[in-house]
Length: 489
Image (cartoon, rainbow, N blue to C red; front, side, top):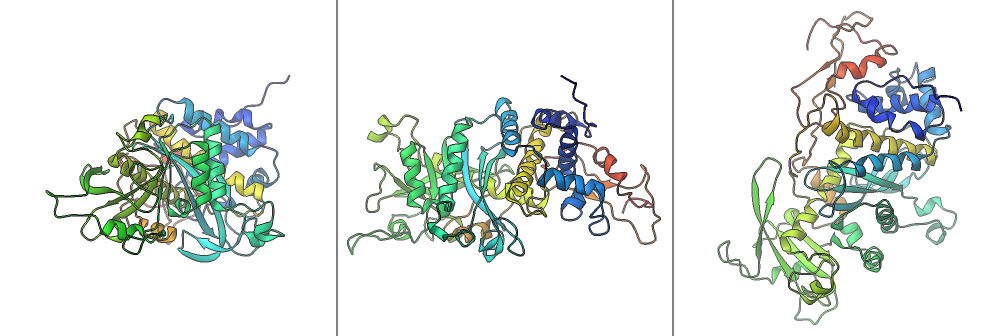
C-alpha cells in the first residue's frame, strides 16, 4: 500500500486538529480542502463567508477561479461522507476529559431558520423563520446541542422539509414534523453515547404531545417550556390555564413567600439573582403526578412575561413516591430552573455560528452540499473549544457560567426575539478581531508588515482559533493580497 501524501499544514493548532480528520478523506485534495474550509470559516468576518470568501477570492470577478472551484467541488461533488466526519468530531469531544459530556448537562433540542431566495435550493420554502420572527422564504434546521454551565457544542443537525415540497404534502411518507426530527436527534445523541441530565426544549416542542410521548416511551427525562395560555378541561371554578394557576398561588413578599420557593441563579459576570419557583396543580398535572408543572419567575406578584417560565418535566419531586421508583436522582425546583436556563446556550451558539462562522452563508443547492457545509461549521465551532483548552497558543482557563435568562412565556418565535435583546450568555463572546480595511489612496500589493488585523488582549473568545491572526491569514495573502496601510487605524 502506498504512503499517503501529507496535506500542506494548516496554521498553528488548527493543523493538529485537522490531522485527526485525515482518515475521513480518501484523497489529498479532500484533506487540503478540509483545512482550507475550516481556515476560511475561522477567519475574522469581513463579508459573508461564501465560497469566494473562504478561498480568499473576489466575489464576482474571481468566482470561477481555481481555488473557489476546488471548494465548490469539495462541497458538491467530492466523495467524502458527512456522517463519518461528524462521528470523528464527536469522538474528539467525547473522549477528551475537558469536553466530555456528563450526566449533569442538558441535551438541548431547538430549531433555527434563515432567509434563502428562490425555490431551487433544497428545503427552501415560505415558512416560519425564528431568526427574523416571521414567515419568509428560507430554510429551517432542527439542531441538538450539549451544554452545561461551562461549555456548549453542537451535536447533530437535520434539515426540515416543508410539506409543500413533497409530492403528497403532509401525507407523504417522507414528511417529518419538527418535533419528530427533534426526537430523531435525541435518538442520535443516545446512540452516540451522549450523557445528560435531561432533554431541554422550548414550547415549540413542549407543546407537542408526540414529542413528549416519545420521550416518555423512551424513558428519557425532560424539561420543556409551555405557553402560559396552555389550557385544560376543568370545572368552572378551577384554573384553566397555566397562567391562571400561577396567579392563584399565594405571595406576600420576599420574607413571606407563601407558596413560592426561592431559587438562586448565577450569572457570567459573577452576580446572582433570586428567582421564585412553585409547583402547579392543574387537571392531571401535579407535583406527585407523572408530569410536573413548574412556574419560575423573577417577580411572583406580577409574573412578567419575559422573565416567567412555565415548564413541564417528568423528573420526580424529592420525597415523592415516584422518586423511589425513578432510575435516576429526583429534581427539586432549583434543579428544574437550572436545567431550563441552560437552553439559552443554543441561542448563543446560533449567534456565534451565524455571525462568525458563516452558518447561513452557503451558496449551494443540493441537500448533500448543505449538510456538508453545516457539519464543517460544527467542526470549526468544536475546534474553538479544542483550541481553548488544548491549543498551543490559546489560553486554558475555566469558562465562566451562563449570563442570560432564557426568555419564556409566548410563542417560540417571541422567545427568540426577546433572547436577542438579552445580555449574551457566552463562554466565547464575539471576537474583537476585524480585518483591516485599506485607507483611501493606499497602494496595491501585500506585505507581511502591512496591517492585517487589530488584536485585543487575549480573552474568552469563541472565534479565537489561534493566538496570531497573521499566521492564520498567511496562506490567504497569496490569493488576495492586502493593501499596504500607513499604520493602525
